[in-house]
Image 1 (cartoon, rainbow, N blue to C red):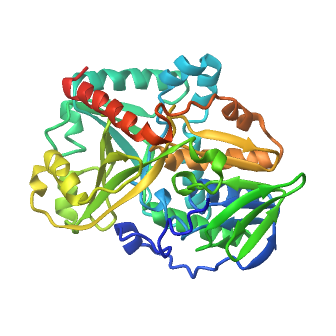
Image 2 (tube, helix red, strand yellow):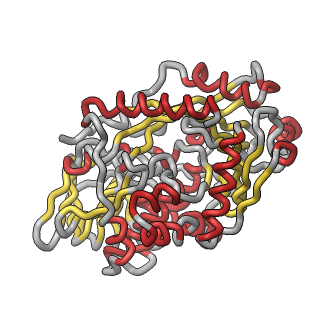
Length: 434
């Protein structure tokens, strides 16, 4: 069953990103029956990436979005270009073997490369800056980062620089961290402006985007598939389903594969250049390496954007600021009583394995989802791999599609409770430093 009201009236939530977006679109709803080479469901990063890659090769691409471009996680996230999957290379090796780990390791920086390339090629204005920091609270965290640096180096990734307690203070003016690691190939940007810029790029290539057009169902026959909305349809030889955490029950076969998980963010009042620079002198974005982590960065107008926490099942906390402010003031006591101008929440799609899922339903419908909190780079990469599959190159698609899907313990009824219990255990390990 469809969820036509999942986005309310389709307007952006009251986030800092929505308030500071630099492209104001005039939404066009899908009316009547449309033909295309490829129909993409969802105008977030996955869908836009796949669509641009196909349009660059001459495909007639139609994107159908239930709300607005970047309405979901793509326009609400932390804005951090973090390389890698949620599941570590060590986990991938243990679970799927050395060959799969070598394959995954060969493409962990590819998603970031797509973003950097398109920002330059299409002139996307999204305040892109290079470099991100993984921050460590404990000696165990530092040992984990040292192991990560060595493992990533084995896969040809040499842009990681370890920081001791003294050196991390050069980047983060906070007493809470014992050290960290810079990934010089990472970065941060305004995520909604990136999505809006990619939409503009797609349209410059001849792609068409219908917004405020919730999909009510997807059917397929021997030669084509049909994407239906309340007021129209798109018929195409290939359909790419990229609804991720906000797909709902539109494609029932996918509903139980991922679980929506909400995370929260807030943006302070403008701090001024001097005060902002005193917090993060080098302007790099930061995420700590705990299981339930905090992440933060400076905006172009010198606000601190601070996020963290999860709610399994995708519900929003009653008071986002009350939830996040203690964490922010623990890291930066100097921000005590600083005004918060914006606070919002949004869902990402969690897979139980923490590895994104690619697959095909029948012969005409492809899907990608489950980036598990690492969606900025993963979605751009998997969008490219979806496009490769549509063009007939299934090499990388089949490698991911062959990885076994692991259902959530407890089923849909109890998966949120099970995941919450598991997170308590990992949070305890973080507190104990083990």
